[in-house]
Length: 142
Image (cartoon, rainbow, N blue to C red):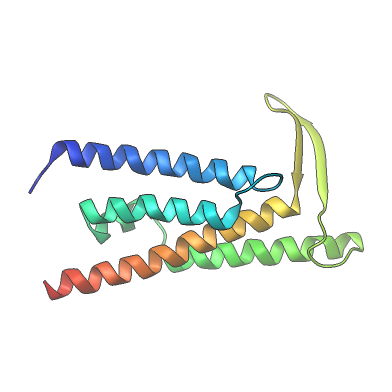
């Protein structure tokens, strides 16, 4: 069954969920939100997309294997833990960079954002891995 309205709405829903998830990721340092809930929201958009289009279409969109996403997320978490060691600090201590960037103005970046981004990518990868596997099994049996 091809339903053009459902397909267009699903594509829009995925984009909106991705934007909301990024908002939650960046908001999480000073207010509720962060990498975990952002990753869940992103995966929710992909789940709905997969229900409408199938697991193969999810794989085309995410480009990398979902397990690769988990590896990238864990690598970012480890990086956030190790960076403070180079500055003589304890692991997972917040190290901050403040600089003036063209078009962006003053930018405040730190290792907590790297950590949260790792959690974001890892959680989304984990959920996508589970969902894609379940969808493939159900598609194979039907």
